[in-house]
Length: 500
Image 1 (spheres, one colour):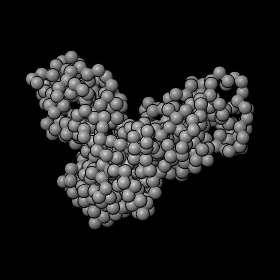
Image 2 (cartoon, one colour; image 1 turned 90 degrees about the vertical axis):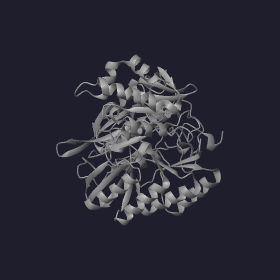
Image 3 (spheres, helix red, strand yellow; image 1 turned 45 degrees about the vertical axis):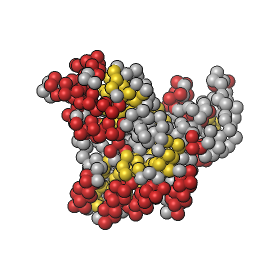
Image 4 (cartoon, rainbow, N blue to C red; image 1 turned 60 degrees about the horizontal axis):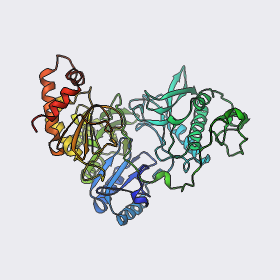
């Protein structure tokens, strides 16, 4: 299997992924954002070498679609010529307003940089799977609570000091808390957890760690200098309390003690240094965040304007026009943000209003009440080779015809296949494409057996029937989700199937 057909990793610039509309590459700028003129140049490259479609993913990465093997190489050379440095190591993600948000508890950038360095020093990039990630969240107006991660370091106030809560295996609400410590200890616990994961193999995540491993991490509260911190057993991934060496040091490690010998070591695979950035499945969607990155945000120097790409996708020409307008208005930077958003920095309030109007005309989501924010849709056909239905065409039709169904209580998931890339979790309503058409799942995932089917081209009409029933049956003050619960799964499925 060559790099262009690999799935299960990440389609980085050096390793495109084959999709239904050609090759896909993903860029994660080291700076987190781009000057408007650089985004313009990237959009122009996408128009020359791809199919003219660009995306921002649920985790805030930039994607260019429709490339060939030759044009992917040309694109990579042009990105290099533009001086855009992209990340290739284990993702250590920070918030889109990091360092400029007056409301954040702590600037997460210094800790994130120290953690990246420690991960590289420990040689973990080549040993961890491409979907392993870390979040360092300083809090503020746009926290990273909605973004899942293997390890999460979250700033918390401790009187006049700042401590870092360490959580694993989940988002800001579902992650398992381990300890609340200072920055140095948080970094070391994070590296220790990642080394445990690496010992289990490249398919492993922190959710696969044993209770004993988690307990050993949770019990690590020492603020001692690295020279006296405990080490990690090279075979079990457990912290060995008898070894006075930092887990991030390169010192030779002692044999693990016999009490940890119950857990067999994972076989270490011969891994290329580039595998961690190889192509793979569409990034997992982020769950709902308390505040969407849409609208105006006060930052240290002026105002930031947040807009969202509908379902994460937009013609490259529209992005070029948006970035051109932003540059004309004096923008200094456009940052990529989770929830498929862009944050435009360096604008005055009046300039923000002007750019917001331009963005709306170009088809971007500019208000959090837009019904498209309640729909999670993967690329579907023809963009994805695995897709069975035209997900985004269906999504646009539903948003236009049935907006009252899409209130803040409900997420509609439209998936081209049973993988459910755009929204891995449970949704109130899911449309999933398979050989039978567009199936409807109520209170399940794309992997759940559908309760009813319609042809893919007619799926929006089935949802319109559900919306009409909600309109007629809804009690005063009742949410759409609550009304659907009263209607029941069987009744909803019947509404969807009716009048074919």
